[in-house]
Image 1 (spheres, rainbow, N blue to C red):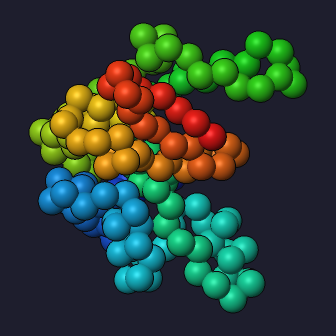
Image 2: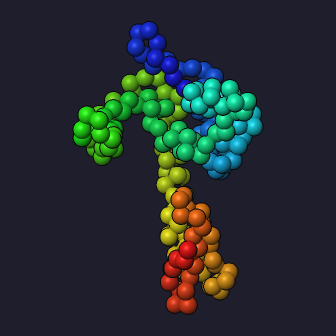
Image 3: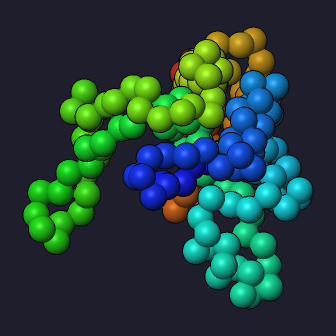
Length: 178
């Protein structure tokens, strides 16, 4: 949504800013990450990562929009004009970056022109927090219901762990089996 101009100031790219606004609007309209990602891919909207786009185009396919990329856009307060620095630190010269606590970030509000107004951003953030139930919380909520054990077995895909089944045992407690 932005470029760094010759004066070293962030400048809005109108076409990209409109895509960012559309992502926020669709999320507020109740669309999920996957539906938004599929919509953007189907309508030919380029992904934020140009290097990946160029590589995929060379292979003859367009890169799909990913859910993680959309989460990053929806969580990024840069779109409301906030510059946030010092998010990561490195213990050793060649070590890995370590994420710092939010209280340690250097935050400059109203640093540049906003694409998204604060109210929209705050509404999306609150909505995302409400939707962010963990797998365990979801299964525990199901266990409280009056359904039988067979009715409330929930299947989850976990990265690197295959399929995980969450269910309620006879005592109504949450359990897992692989």
